[in-house]
Length: 339
Image (cartoon, rainbow, N blue to C red; front, side, top):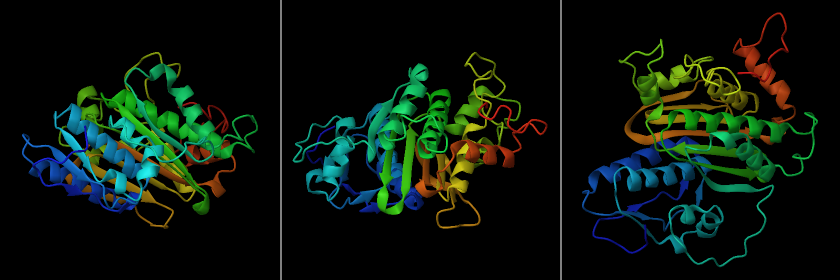
């Protein structure tokens, strides 16, 4: 990837993308790539880029990687250095992850308590998932990492739990690398976390594993809805030593979705032509579910939670599992942290 112009017309990236606008970003990127002949470069104009959520940044970096690695397309970025968000995107290592060494006109400071720059998760990271999750949580909430009291470590514990579940989901299903990014927003008392891959998607994972509940007529949205049900995973039926019995007992995504509900947050899951978003931040009663006209080339999961609601992660998990009927009725506190 480099920055010079090419013969193809550029796509001017939108100035602002919140998680509610992710379908529009998917459509813009996918439509543009489909219209440009494969013999020509793809050119993204960053002139107007001002604010993207971690979900939007993860979408863009995963899409660029898909174009480069799967489609063997050449990518150019225009006007990146004049974009309002240029310094921020440098701090988040967006350009470095794209292979660009651009001049930095600022001093890098310790990001602890503020953000986690884009990290690439490779397919061989299965033995490091806990360490990666703890590193991200410690960076976002450094003062809580040293405590072992759930009354004091609610935000830290939730980020560790959610990050572990999301990374495991990618490693088990994606067949590709992935990118994870997180940010604390003090003025909004919010934390946003996103992970995106450019792999076979949730439906592809179900089709490949062929669990007992698989049906070939299912589309991408059908399989997203299925994946969000408790104890459902493409690999639930597969037995393997993960230290937790089955490869994935199928509760990770459903619990992360419930945690967003309890923290007045937003949960987004997109995979190829399917899109689901539960928005409790704006108090939407029903989730937004779409069959997209243009696919996202992988799977994206984004989570926004309110820091004010992150009091006791054990209690949040218990409430979530209770609603999903995952707790032993006789011993309601048994197996609280088991899948």
